[in-house]
Length: 109
Image 1 (cartoon, rainbow, N blue to C red):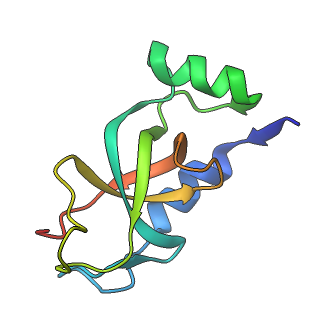
Image 2 (image 1 turned 90 degrees about the vertical axis):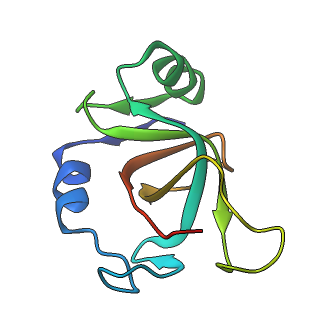
């Protein structure tokens, strides 16, 4: 199955908002905040390899993607912290392998 993402992802990123407002929160408008081991551009060799294996075509290779991501469902609860990069992503439907259309956020976990 092949997905085609276009400039809509970039536009969605620009309008994406974190549900908690500028001071933070534990939810994005697209789902839970993600903790990703790596956040890079879709053009990065590691990201493009994963996208290729999944059959995902991203037209804007400058869009940020998160690699090896897990949702953060409760901020401040024991055992649910992020020592990597916290992001809000538009497309989290790849079971944590990759998240597409990410915006880094600071939630002071």
